[in-house]
Length: 202
Image (cartoon, rainbow, N blue to C red; front, side):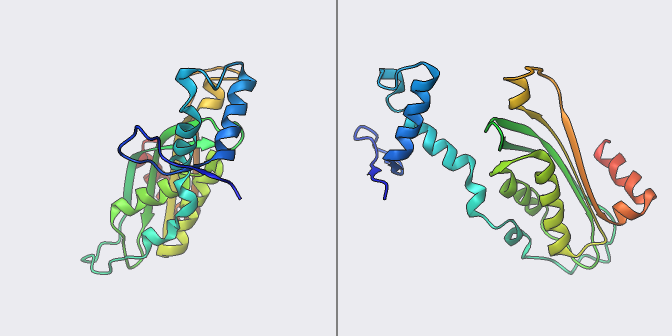
């Protein structure tokens, strides 16, 4: 079992403990890149990095579907498109653990019930706060809404920039990747598909 290192004595706020083996792994990475983990500026870096990654990956402890559990049937007969767009998010790619930053548009055509619009963003963030690839993230968000709201259709479009492409490798900044996933009427009916994508700006 990993031993735990407690909060810094000079930090009155008290931060959650970080396993020593996790900190040592980060020190190893620092040494491997060519720096000295014992120099002053890096002494607290292993614990800071570990806590940051725990925060980046909060989605592993979250059930995205739970955000859709409270639904409303009194909608005054509304049965048209519900669209939330330009939702900012951040994730990390599972191949290089580099940042993925972008925005999403989420739409559904309700059948007999709706959810609070903030819940759509919460579903996105729950999946984004895991190691991801953009294609899977898009599909997971769409499938969660499709399975839990039983709508006529779901459409999810994500546009993002990938740090593994802009900061390393091909090093090409300013490139955006767009992915989409459609279910139900948005997949089967061309008119509905064109309408939702147009409203999303695509």
